[in-house]
Length: 71
Ligand SMILES: [Zn+2]
Ligand SMILES: [Zn+2]
Image (tube, rainbow, N blue to C red; front, side):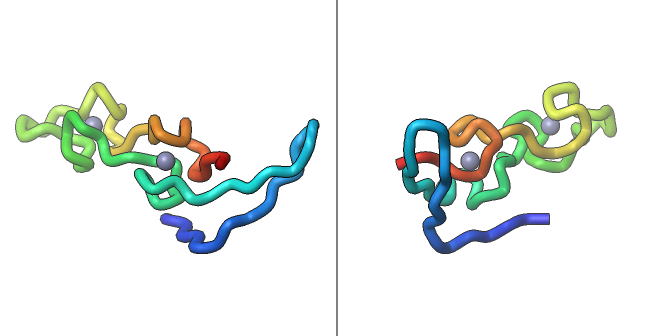
């Protein structure tokens, strides 16, 4: 399930309010396609991908899996 946010949203955090925007790398899902298996979760040998544990995706580095990044 991919969540697509197109608008900025406000977040209240200790110390103030700041804006966040959707991560451009993952489009807000917080997940990135696995670079080792290409997002399939398995290799051509049908072995399960050790890198993503067969899920086909890994945590997005750009937003640390949050799907949004602070301005
Ligand atoms: Zn993988
Ligand atoms: Zn991201």
